[in-house]
Image 1 (cartoon, rainbow, N blue to C red):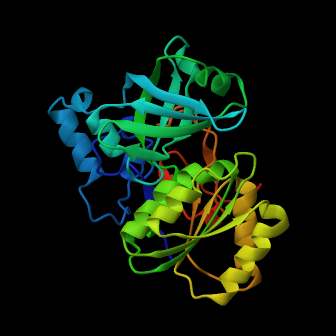
Image 2 (image 1 turned 180 degrees about the vertical axis):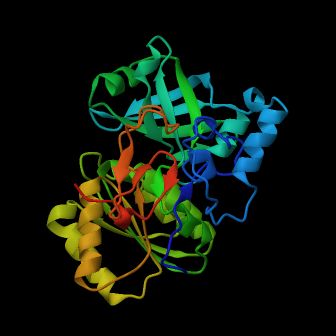
Length: 321
C-alpha cells in the first residue's frame, strides 16, 4: 500500500459537490473555482468546474441536496459513567446508510435549544436500517444539555471527515493493522476495526480504559480483533505500542484518541525509523462542518491552510502546536 496520501475533499463528486465553497470561489480542490487561471487538480473523476457551470446554466444550484436538520427520536439513553452517555437514535434509512463509513459524524442538539448549540459527534455504530449509536461526554454547556432527558434531538448530517487517512482504511485488504485507542477514542475505533476486519485484515488493538472504562472490547473481540488492554496509555500503553511496532511488519497504524496521543504515536514511529501510513481521528474544532466558518482550519508543514472538516490529509503533515 502506498505511503503517499493525496489530499482531497471528502465530499468530492458526492451528492453534496459542488458545494457552497465552489459557488464562493473557495473550493478546496479545484484551482479554477479558487479564482486561479490554472487547472492542476490531477483528478480523474467528474470535473467539479464542469458540474458547477452545468448546474448554474440549468438553474440547478438550489436543487442540489443540502445537509438539513431532522428531528430524531431517542431510542435509548444511559450513562456509562457519571459524564459519559451512550445514546441510540432512530434515523431515516438513507441517513443510517450514509453513516456506516468510518469517520462519519453528525451535529446534534436538543430540539428546544438554538442552532448554535450543535456539537459534532462521531458515529460509534449503525444498528439495522434505522438506528445509530453515539457516545457523548458531558464536559460543557452544549454536551451537558445534549445528554439531558429528551425524547427527541435535532440531527444534521451526514459528515464524513472524522478520520484522517480514510483511503488507507478503505483500500487495505489482507494486511496487518496496529490500532491504539484510549478513553473517548474507543467509539470511533469500532467502525474502523469493523471496516478493516471486513476486508480480511488482521487487527491488533491496544485499548486503554481512560475515564470511560472499556466500552468496546467485547464488540472488538467478536470481530476477531486481538486486544491488549491497559489501564493507562501514558504509563504502559505507549511503551507496549512501541514494542509491538518494532516486532512485526505492519501495513497500517491507526490512532483513535486526542491529539496528544497522535503525537506520541508519531514520535514512537519516528524513533524506530518507521514510515508506515497512519490514520487518526480528526479532533479539530468544528462549528459548521461545511468549510465556511474556518474554525477547523489547520496549517500543514508546507505552510498551507486547510479546512479539516472537508480535506483528507496525512496526519503527520499537519503542523504540531
